[in-house]
Length: 314
Image 1 (tube, rainbow, N blue to C red):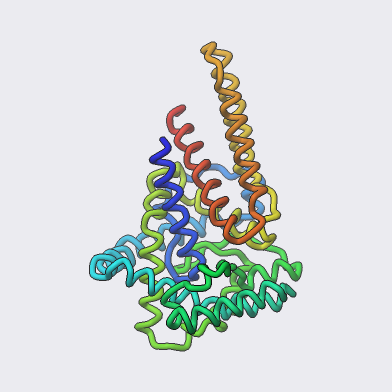
Image 2: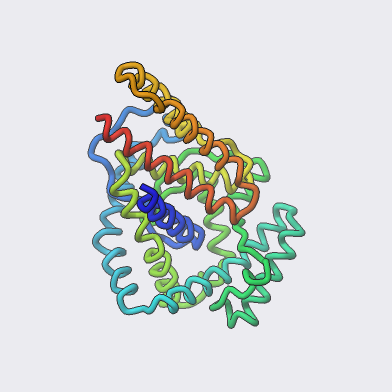
């Protein structure tokens, strides 16, 4: 189990990295053919689920028949160290946008550090091909205009699935427009943009397969994961855990308690309590950008384990 969980953790971190690059790739597996009835909370955040699911399926087919084959070819012909250099290059350019949003959110100390990170990697790191700044203690921060809008008090709005682009929110749409305008890659040739998207899709490969294989309903899994991740970013990791995942914890605790009473086996409920405690500790650990990567990965990992348990019970 530890080996499988370790692989899942790595796969989820891959998809987070790809999402942070901001490339136009689909971050979901194939849509479930069975549409489950929404909970009241889900209806409030996702009132357009029927349309979103159709776009979700469309994006999945585009990914399967277009993006994935091209991405596989890219990985086959491109050495790993070249892929890493390309990722570092585009990630370094993204720091221009990060610094802008640092200033807009009045995070001046962080903005100074991010400016230094960009300067070091752009010079000593050979235009960002090497992440030299990380070795001197300047970690990569993640700030975008959607987070800025959240700091300014703009509500998140409805959950939306955008053709070709994937998950978003009403607040995320103007955020994406601003971030795209602030990204230098937008103004270079199409070949460079394609390389950026290919690299992001290649980084997300493992996580996309994980969602496909592990989730009972990939659409719901993607929606809850995306919204929870965006909430943690918008609040700098101070947000509470997702209500739906906490609800899943409660259901599993009740089910385990019933199972213990019926079979007479001990240890089920304490084990679930330990999992629930670990889940809460993960949520509380999002006090920095680096910790948010590891913490979110654990959240997804635990959600995958719970879904596996639900499959067994059925």
